[in-house]
Image (cartoon, rainbow, N blue to C red; front, top):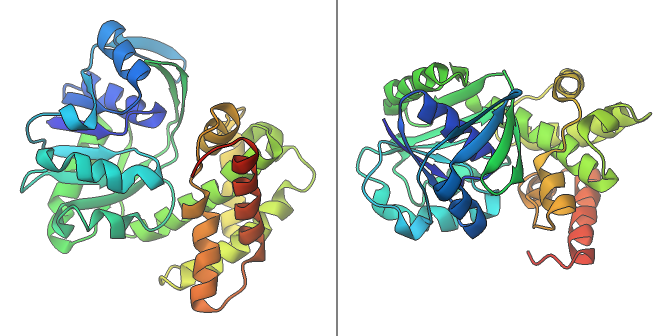
Length: 309
């Protein structure tokens, strides 16, 4: 299958690497010159669950990608999704399926501005990744990659992509309630990502703090209220228990927001996580003070670092 990875940072490279090794024709699309140059000159090096390998996979800028693709995976940052979709319009054919595995909330609405509804597949992943150097990433995980079509006619295509992911050792699973999974994944990022960034620690270190569960609970209570406005029921205790288990399996990993904000001084996705919940609270008349202060703290950190949003 001819596959494009739209946004080839750490996670996108990990997915692209494994799908390439499984025999698919993969093209990496990104906008970081040093990363693109390194991949094209030396290949993409990935440490996959402790096993390192290098594959020659073409890497291009969005404006330089040619031809139509069967499948496009979006792995941009939330705030970059619309811009990326605008730039790659020429590669989106009548039947090109677009898979969104982005962190955060509200991406379906953005996708529908550029992609036919029947071609959109939404999903979540709990796999983690990081960039070690241009053209070199580490990629860790063994959990599922859940997918579901958002239009009834897209079920067969979604199940085909699930099979492709499974063949690539990415553990594809067809979901019958992907919206719930998206909200639960947002809970992961709305707790672990933001708190590790504010505290400047990795997930394992955070899990050992005395009040980690209480902090996560305060956030999840507000996420639960927001989810209800979209018809999703999030049990607070069950969700916090799930987060505790995630903490145990991920270990000493710095989440993506920490990588962006603390390590690389880049804008964060907080407006699509806690910020989105705070905005929904205003629109639907419920209280979300914890999410609002967390959003303010992350933006204040961006301001202190001189990061432009």
